[in-house]
Length: 82
Image: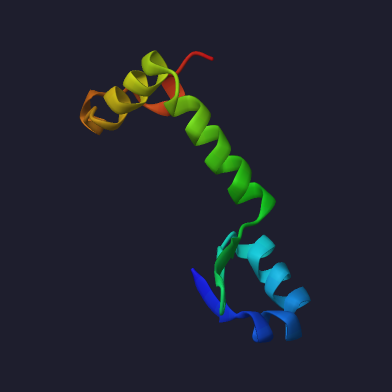
């Protein structure tokens, strides 16, 4: 995560936003009243999708099962029937 203060962000807003979009790296902007985080749209959509999938118990269980499956127990990609 890239950290900056609001003054630096104001001076470099276009460059910082371009970097955020290009590299999907969140930006933490600190102010005297607190902090704010800027995300690329792609990163935001990924977070929303993850939350959505995690909200469905059966889907969440399938994902966890897949994460816990050894690669030795998986079939080669070429053998997957789509």
